[in-house]
Length: 220
Image (cartoon, rainbow, N blue to C red; front, side):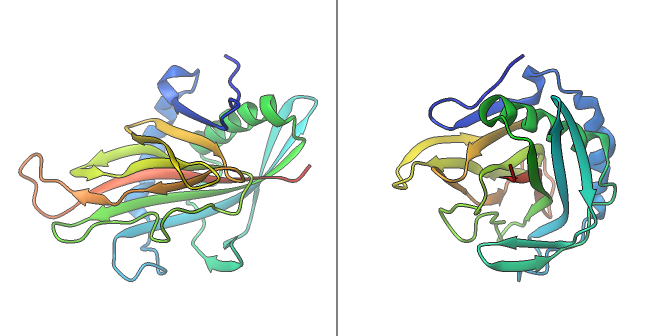
């Protein structure tokens, strides 16, 4: 399957519709239970780990190198996070490969830098979880995956919204398991609506959404 970004530069995908080995997510999902709280969020509504990678395309072979880096820079702000427990987890590597192959079909890159964000959003009965507290924005990257959804539990909301360069809404979707959007971050803006607690099965306490995000920059 050859996938590439369309003229309107975003692509909504479901891993089940590709050749992706989704069974590799089972072990990775367990690591969400060990995520530390995000110290940059005052309320305990987000847990997070981070890793950074260099991707090289050599003779159409994708090589992925994890960089031992725990600082993330975005829009002239530097934040520090704990590194993902297993940076070479097969699920992470396969997800990076899938998206780099799509971008290679579009941009013919030879080298990328990718930030990977492992996030759990936690919502409580009277406290929502915001993954876009800054509102409609760009991530200061070339391309992004704002959220690959791996699990939704006792929540509602969390809609992914895309805007054009004039901040006019052009697309909205509630992403379910294994769904995500790859988009151009130079021409488009994005926003994710808050995740809200939703008591669907008599469970009292909290709900959560487990996601994986990518910030992708072309080096050459």
